[in-house]
Amino acid sequence: MSLFDGYATEGFYDEVMQPCGAPRLHYRKLFQRLSEMSLEDYRSRVQLAELTLIGQGITFNVYGDHRGAEKPWPFDLVPRIVPADEWNVVEKGLKQRLTALNLFLHDVYHSQKILADRVVPRDLVVGAVHFRPEFVGADPPGGLYVHICGSDLIRDADGSYYVLEDNLRCPSGVSYVLENRTILMRILPKLFRDLSILPVDHYTRQLLHNLRQLAPGGVESEPNIVLLTPGVYNSAYFEHAFLAQQLGIELVEGRDLFVDDNIVYMKTTKGPERVHVIYRRIDDDFIDPLVFRPDSRLGVAGLVNSYRAGNVALANSIGTGVADDKAVYAYVPDMIKYYLGEDAILPNVQTYLAWRSSDLDYILKNLDKLVVKATNESGGYGMLIGPQATKAQQDEFARLIKANPRNYVAQPLISLSRAPAFVDDHFEGRHIDMRPYLLCGLDGITLIPGALTRVALRKGSYVVNSSQGGGSKDTWVLAPDEVRSTAGPQSDYDGLLRQSLLQWRQQQGGVSNLDELAGQEGAQQQ
Image (tube, rainbow, N blue to C red):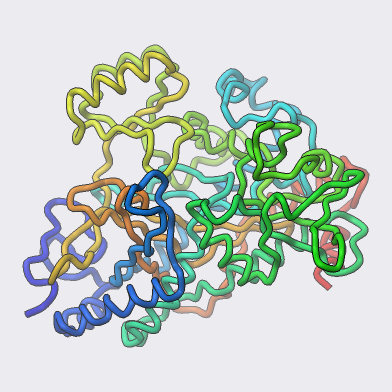
């Protein structure tokens, strides 16, 4: 018997199986390999994977769980495969999107032209929880605000890709992308023999290269880069430790740093060492008690002044959260049109904004058909899935929405695509999404050819977050016929981004042409 016996698509778009019951062309070899495996063999691989995850400490934390916070990372061994032509569309669409979002952030913290032209409502932006008026007029290195981005993609019933949300503050999950690939290659090496799969292990090299570029001017030696974590009780602490180790940089907490005369130092046994670049995994609210929350014990007093003075760089920059507000998200296609003169390659999900009176009326009348989200919650919290909610839950959300309309948006329930997941002794379809990771540096945007595919392991669930019972899959991007660089092809958006950087540097009295800019970047790399 095959593990796929009885497998049914049940009317959903299935990544592996066509409605007729035959595997899709790019899955045929993988389908054959998995069909040939016995239940005992597959189960032994699953157990070995679980032991590997536990042994390597690959975990995540769930806040408020009485059974204990730290959990082994749920990993389903059936990979997701993305053909090269599909990935090219995803790559171009995400680069287009991140280019526009960086231009939007620079605009709203400087001239605010897009607000003056009423493309995006001013009140929506300046009233956003994560808009930082303290940083209006501040210039991050190179004019870039977002250096690491993780946008969540979904596919609907006909297989079309949509952007569900953008994560521009401290996006998490990339460590699981890298570890999933490593573990699967050890546990099921034969699966990799039949297909040409693009590697993902260059992610940390590219990230380190980009972080080095952010170092303040005048740094003649290797810049000192650190990763700032809230500490061991943070839900993503494993990832913080993993990335610091892979990058070859120090993992520090706020208590390990101090500021003197607007210079950031790290405490060491040999005395203070200056810090030039901070890859921060702490939200704005906690990063500096002198500027934001005075009760924060996670940040560094004086860090913001050092940042504003140009003595230390932050990735991502302070204030990026205004662009991943779920109400501002609704205007990203308008941003793309405004800044780039193009239609969005990857569309948004239709979004209703409760602060609009007409949308509010529609939302309240259709709570049983919509997914309602708080604009600044994450991890599957603050969300109502109307078709699966009780009348009491719908009434409670109606009360919350009426009390604070700005804080809620609603979207139709998308029939998320599904992929096989191992359940007991066979494969069953489970809903999935996908989070690719982009790295934005002074010389362009890189999209890692892979992603965190999250899977809702509970039958019928649409919530893929690990905190809500979700797991993950390895994501394989197939190589095209021609040889391709692992960093992916450069696009027009890289050139546009470089042109924007040039304009920023000219405003600062820096370089006068792109050749000179390239020369400066080459000197930095050397």
